[in-house]
Length: 262
Image (cartoon, rainbow, N blue to C red; front, top):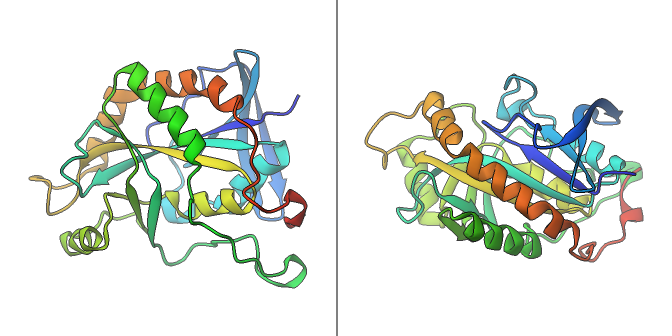
């Protein structure tokens, strides 16, 4: 039985202990290596991937997003729930809130953004009108309300290169352009999942107000503290949502999987 669901854990989400009968696999593909742990939950096989590696050893700009997404694709994964720790540029999205983004802004600079680079793979211009699965988002929204956390269905994630935090001027720019959240990892992960014909949604946990809005300097320790405080709620949300996401009809987003490079 192949895992049809995957969890990509971001900062503070490294432990797949909610799954039973865990096994670990290192998968190699044309883009590199990816470490995946596979387990079971309520009769479902679920793949778990720590985006930053064991012990948070890989910075955001060096994550091998293509190897990770392609490894999940080859495993047979159809839907992904990812987590991210984010800063907020929107006063309505306070620390501790959960946000389910529906749009993104991309300010990254050095990353490999696509599987389609010409040659044998060809050139494909992927539609990203809805980069995040609205069906999965709705399931997550309903489950978050059931858990009892403060949740927002929709928001614009502005992705910066990192690993440094943003300047107040960059945050002001983000606000002018309509960004609600700032993070360092969701692009190109979301667009690669789109290219690979996998439904994808992200749960963004607000850990702080962004630079120039926050009254204090930003620290990574602060991010980890807020994630730890809300870890139980995040785990409960994901576990509640997985069976409902598995029951959704599989949608290939208008392009046949065989069009993918192989």
